[in-house]
Length: 161
Image 1 (cartoon, rainbow, N blue to C red):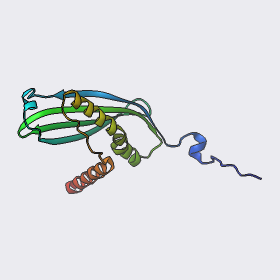
Image 2: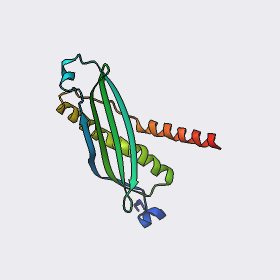
Image 3: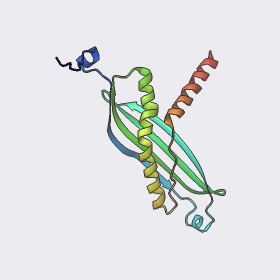
Image 4: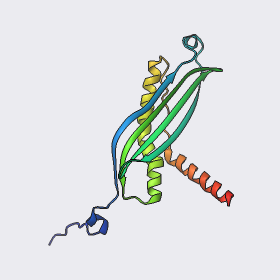
């Protein structure tokens, strides 16, 4: 007699298992400014890069969520701003069947990890169109950033009590 795998768990019987699916990735907002052009092109190129990351999420209808990753880059050569570039890379995700802690981690770290390569490519393309060298941003560990933020919030909550 052969054995068959069964889906006898209550969640499997009711179709309530955890689900995650990327529905769409899109640019929500995009900006580029080169305030010192064309003079900046005649200066020695010794860039200093400042990077700012931010995420936000909101629940859409049902089990759909929008996650927006904002990546802002300011590049200076000396004291002069060469350019400022910013992208709000967004995604719509179907997420259901997760407990509160897992959902928070998914929205705060897992989804931004998915969006970052898109944001990085969009910024590189934008900067190249301004005739500056590509940024080639290094990967970001959103899991570590999420853990740091959780620790900071817990520390702040404990010091308030």
